[in-house]
Amino acid sequence: MSKLYIKGGRRLDGTLRVQGAKNSILPILAASVLTAGNTVIENCPDISDTATAVEILKCLGCGVSRQSGVITVSSDNVDNFEIEEALMRKMRSSIVFLGAMLSRAGEAKISMPGGCELGPRPIDLHIDALSRMGAVFEDKRGYLECKCPDGLRGAEIHLRFPSVGATENIMLAAVTAKGTTVITNAAREPEIDDLSSLLRDMGAKIGTDGGNMVIEGVKRLYPVVHTVIPDRIVASTYLAAIAATGGKGKLIGANPLHFSSVIAALSDAGADVRWTKDTVTVKTDGRLKGVRNIRTMPYPGFPTDAQAPLMALMTTAKGDSVFVETIFENRFKHVNELIRMGARITVNDRVAVVEGVDKLQCSSVECTDLRGGAALAVAALSADGLTVIDNVGHIDRGYEKIEENLSALGADVKRY
Ligand code: EPZ
Image 1 (spheres, protein in one colour):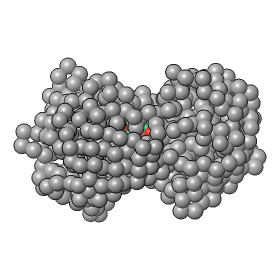
Image 2 (spheres, rainbow, N blue to C red; image 1 turned 90 degrees about the vertical axis):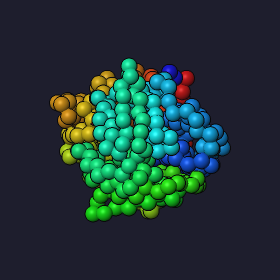
Image 3 (cartoon, helix red, strand yellow; image 1 turned 90 degrees about the horizontal axis):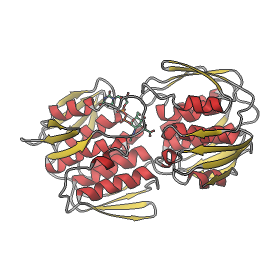
Image 4 (cartoon, rainbow, N blue to C red; image 1 turned 180 degrees about the horizontal axis):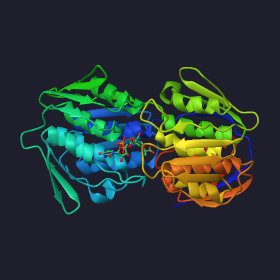
């Protein structure tokens, strides 16, 4: 994998357009399987997870064309419902193709999904829910074979945890199931709303009833044109990067309402953050102060995906910061790499205490996962000297053109 060479210690200053949301485009591409015809998706991020999702669509028999940020999926001839293991292992969200395949054809064969190693990534919520809708699963030597002998039917589904992926899979299965599906404790992330908006435009009947999601199955759906929402985690990461260098910057095309908890944390730390409906600016003069209550929660709480980039920022704040990771069991793998750069962090189970230091030291570090890798880029920008970040492919899964974007803000970043 390639490496990033970052000469830190320079104040960032500039304007950046925020890319389309990785965690939106993936289920939305899966949804394009639900109907024949050409579905056109705009504002697609140019990241490796998008490329993997396109490979999966082609593996299912779809025609896919890409014209810069626009992907057109032709789903007239979807004739294969088995996703090869190599593709499934490339990313976690490959699992949401399950619901789409069951909707389209009533069958699917998948292996266990891959994705960032953040602790066990079970799919019990997906399987339990789809089983209640009539799917029958058979474990065949690491592959899951799934059939719906009587088709998919609506069901009452309570999620013990508001799982994003499970909510998406249930939505994709329920929109053409026979009858009505009610999901209690469904995920409410902006990416879920983006998927709902696409499905409604396709003709699905999705509503809410007292906080529950209610989906009435329809006979067929229609291809549409859809624009993906901006990526709130990428926006959060670039704000952290600008703040980590004591700089100032403006993000355009961001939706501040999608990451207000991150903006609140940055403001609590002393950054001057302002916003309009589609821009966010940040300015920092002098050292930030520690924030002692960053607790990751389902939306609208603090997003777990922003935990690592914000931790990198807080390593040089004045005083201590406390991070509690409630979503994933093992999402502190970036801590050791930050410690190699002179950060002072102690981890006890799900709690990380960051004792602010004056400066990080440049070093050679390695990406452990997507957001952990982004955290290392934030840290490298604030450290004086040259930091080399290895395994940058992790970052490329979710951040488009990271070296160009950081360079546009005035950073000295090269990739070899
Ligand atoms: C989605 O992952 C996102 N990925 C993740 O972003 C994000 O961190 C996560 O939601 C939480 O917001 C995509 O959308 C592609 P979950 P997902 O199901 O769907 C447990 C990134 O960096 N769980 O909400 O996999 C699970 O173990 C990625 O962009 C079960 O126990 O997350 C975890 O502890 C990382 N059983 C918790 O729920 C299940 O069947 C959250 O998982 C499913 C999940």
